Every structure is written in structure tokens, then in C-alpha cells.
Length: 266
Image (cartoon, rainbow, N blue to C red; front, side):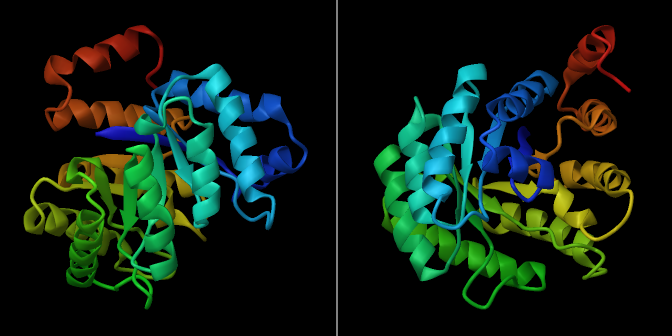
């Protein structure tokens, strides 16, 4: 299971201020810290600044690449911003385009870039009517996304289906639906990898990290292939490393022992 560090995102007020003020040291601190904490991909999102997003994405990608050689997830709803981010990557074939949906503008704007750069793509279970409320609806959207992706000649091994998480503060069954979706996508679309953004489950509630930590093991048991999360939450990373032992991903607990000896378990 891949860990994608989610911290460089202007949804966070501190990150937004750093981007607006061109605070290079803070952006690089987040990139370096996440890499050291165990992230395997670094997500970069500079959204919410109309007109400036492509240029800001190039700026942020350049900064992050100065401090880590991890693959980057170029995260935007705007195809031109994704184009700018991929163009700024030293190795765009290792990057991720995050993300495409069944909305026509994003299909036509992003899939050609994925084919051109040979990168990985994250496809969200969203169509023009929004997010289906149940697992069956999301699997149907995933099937249609795979059909569109194949029409562009993109290898399916470079595709992750984002099964989506809605906040339990809005949809009480959100956690169960996401777990069912991960399992259903894996069963209905063999070989297709799944992804999910962990922190979506806790939006709007206090002590969000507690909920995120509680939901991580069920997601891992369901078999999700990649999780967007906060690797700087040391307790969360401890839960992740312990769960890898329990679910047989960390054979004999060797990684767990190494992180214990390094003082990285909380």
C-alpha cells in the first residue's frame, strides 16, 4: 500500500498563506518532513487562487523537487494546472495526475496529458451528477472511467480508482460505503488499483485525527492500494505500521522493528 503525503494543499490556511506569500522554506519543510516520515508520493495542490494556479503549481513543484526525488501527485481540477505541473517535473513519467472524473471537460483535458507524459492517473468515482451514494453506483462510474481511459490507450496498471470518502458528519454511512466500494471495485474490476483520501472521513468534526486513526485499519483490511494521509501524524503512522504487521504486509514485523529502533513509533 502506497502512502501519499497530503500536507501541501491550500485547503489548509497555513499552506495557502505560504503559497500566497511565496514562502519557499515552508513548502520545502512540508515536502522534506513528509518524505522523512514515510511518504512515498507527495501530493501538491495550490488550488483556490484563480488565474495564478498554473504558475504557482510550477513554482511549488520546483521547490519540492529541490528537497526530495519522490514522485509528485499534481493535484488540481484544472487541466492547464496539471499540464504545468507535469511539465515542471524532472521525471513526469513517475508523476501522478490527480485527478480525472467523468465530467467531459476533465476527461478531454486531462487524459491526453496522461497519455502524453506516460504518468499515473487518479480517477474519481464522480460523474456529472456528483458522487453516487452507494458502492454499486460508484463501481458503475468506475467502469465507465476505465472505458474512457482505455479509449486513450492508457495502460490500466497506471490507473488508480479513488473510491471516495464523504464526511460522516454529513453522511452517517459514509465509512461503510467507502469500505464497500473498495471491496466492490477490487471484485468487479480485477487488477485495477484503488485509492482513497483518509482525512475526508472526519471533516466537520472535532479531534479529526482520532477519527482518521480509527478508520485507517478497516481501509487497509479492505485492501486499498494507496492512501492520501498526513504522514506527520506520528500516532497515525504508528497505527499504519502496526496494521501492516497484523495484515501480513510487513513480514515478521521487520519494518515495525526498524521504526521502533529508530524511535519512530508513538
